[in-house]
Amino acid sequence: MQAYDRKNPDLIIIVTVLLLLGLGVVIVYSASAIKAEGTYGDSFYFAKRQLLWAIAGLGMMFFMMNFHYTRLKKCAKTIMLVCFLLLILVLTPLGVERNGSQAWLGIGSFGIQPSEAAKLGLIVFFAWYLERHQNQIHHFRKGLLPPLSILVLALGLIMLEPDLGQSTVIAGTTIILIFAAGARVSHLLGLASLAIPAFAALVMVAPYRLKRIFAFLDPWKYELGEGYQIIQSLYALGPGGLMGLGLGRSRQKFLYLPEPQTDFIFCILAEELGFIGGATVIMLFLLLLWRGVRVAITARDPFGSLLAIGITAMIAVQVIINIGVVTGSMPVTGITLPFISYGGSSLLLMLTGVGILLNISRHSR
Image (cartoon, rainbow, N blue to C red; front, side, top):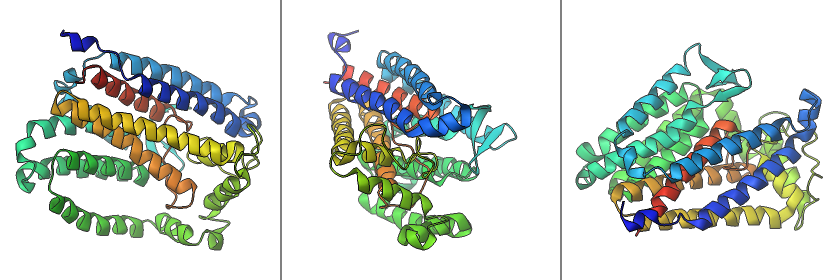
């Protein structure tokens, strides 16, 4: 290996992720203690599992940090095929249904979401593909159509679960990745003109999605139905004020807000730590995204650059959607807040992605 291969990883990324991860374990405990005590007789039930997944995720992060990212090129197609196999398996009787979506593979409380693996797997594959065809990216048929066909196939399988939230994250991440690879803006605008009616059709064919749109526009009109979560989230954000009610003193976690440790954990955080706590978390994410873009810019090859921008975009899109939902700026959809929300497979795959990002930083210019 050359001397630059022994370069230290981006320390700011490591510290930022560790801060978010540590805060996440604390807030998961605070948000879930009441429900865990009532349901499982153990107030630490969710926190202990989150900590175990965090340890496993850190193990993967440090492993990938020392695994040369260029080796991923050799197995990019295999990774994609495994992701598609998992997306197909979850639709069979092997899949586990939770909250109306057959999106898990596993036994009992232990399970993984193939769509989480697909997010990272597709980034690796598209980075490999776009590097190999970077001279054709300006041509729609030769450059854009093949990856878009794979994207549509993956989204189709995920929508059969159904999981509109994960589909949105994957679609948003892929579009950013394709744009960074040099695709024409006119082509992307043309795709957007087709995607908007398709998205509207997906909403129209599922009555519960249409209700979520109506609830987003006027949550108080549906306060006992689809608007309930948004209203309870706003009730948590309001009393938080500047400094918050204090760690562990949230009121909405007393079974007012369903599953406060997952998708809506940010509102519990803001209720307890206030505007300052919420703003600090957002600043940490902005710092992480800045360093991720910097890694992409200083990468030594197009594959590393595209891989870094894809991972960074995945985190950014997920943060925007989650906080947008919690603040009532977007319709409700089931997307976790990276590194903070309770969720094993999400945490594991996010930290694996960060490990790849750190490895790229070790070999940057």
